[in-house]
Length: 113
Length: 111
Image (cartoon, rainbow over all chains, first blue to last red; front, side, top):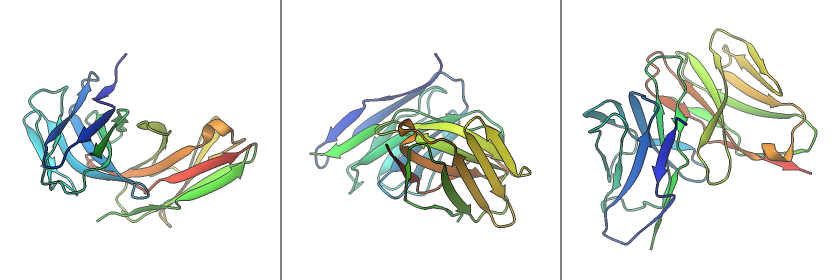
């Protein structure tokens, strides 16, 4: 089955620690996205990538980093510079084109110990 | 920037119709989407409408678009307890590269 896989489902971070969230898709989509979801605030765009080896900052990129070395993979690193990292993180991908929806993974919940 | 707004909460009784509303500010929106999110899960695409359409019906779901007022609604007929979830509207502009999501409406269906 084609889809988007995020791992792990739950992640805990100690103060001052970097953590990396995995996102893999086998849909052969060019574009991939990372969103942060907080209660009552909807989805906020962190980073997105429309092609391998290229990515752009979204609305809340500070304290996060990404890479796009392979088409199917778009890992997100939450660095120690992100002071309030507790949230639900969603990865999405989509085909190129104006009439294509975004498809989502099941999310990773990050908590601070 | 583009704003997409929704009411945060809606409660309905099982068997009634639910209407979830969304307003947006981007006049260049081309496609508008409705997604459903169940607890602890990602977003599932429910339906979408192109900006030159007024209405789209898909089984129990009816989408209405008033482009002049920039108002989108999702009607769920015969609402069931399994419809309890958060519903997000989203719009995308001409390039289709970025989606702008609303805050989400939490629908509670009372048995």
